[in-house]
Amino acid sequence: MSTTSAAGDPDGFESWLRGRVPERGLRTKGASVLEVLLTQPRRASYSSAAEAADLAGVNVATVSRTAQALGFRGWSDLQHELRARYLSSLSAPDVAAAQRTDGDLGTASLGRDLESLALLARRLDETQIRVIADAIAHTRRTLVVANGSYVAVGSALGHNVRLAGYDATVVRDDADLANHLSRIEPGDVLVAISFWRLYQSTVTAAEEAHSRGARVFVLTDAASPALAAAAEQVVLIPAEGVAFFPSLVPGLAVAQAIVAHLSALDPERTRASIEAAEAQWSRFGLMHRQPRRG
Image (cartoon, rainbow, N blue to C red):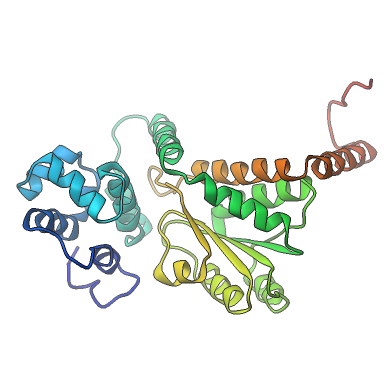
């Protein structure tokens, strides 16, 4: 990957990385680490801290300090976002080639999800979850925007928000999205969900909602500058899968964390909503097994 091709692109890999360099700059050895990240993103994003140190001609401590200077807790966090940014610059066939995995892909996929959930548990800011849940609880309207396979995350979030007793509409069609945005008002909430290369309609929706005074929250693995600028909170979620497919598992885990917090804000409201839903499930005969009475 050329270090010059992305330089003029505000949404590009190099611009993102250089934008994290502190105003005072990096020391000589830290600059060497940065140069490796810029010129060998694929190799660096799959390397251990020791391997990255060898590439840069420095020691492991310098790699860790450089990661911290760039705003990360350490090499592991930098490496995962570096990989997400790098993969988002690739086409689907290129992603499959970059993620070439030996052995059984099903087992590899499960292993990758477990690694991503462990990373998510370490770095997720619980405050972000509380802020999103509180916003949903105190707004008149929540729009959840998701496309493609990411609709699975949006649908789970919207379904459970409604079950908890709050309003939420999941929008997955661009024409429908435009119609909903025409009615969005200050104080409304938009939750944008998109991973990998991001859907343009999701970015446009976030920008439009922000311009209309709505509160915008983003669930993504690597937000573009435009998406981040429109958002009140960006929850960074690892989404690397195997083969062509980004993983939905960590995104679903975050959606579940949001509704878990939401259900605790007004337990009586949520209980009443669930009981009402249960009554309708029985009325329509939806469930194969009915609950025992008494």
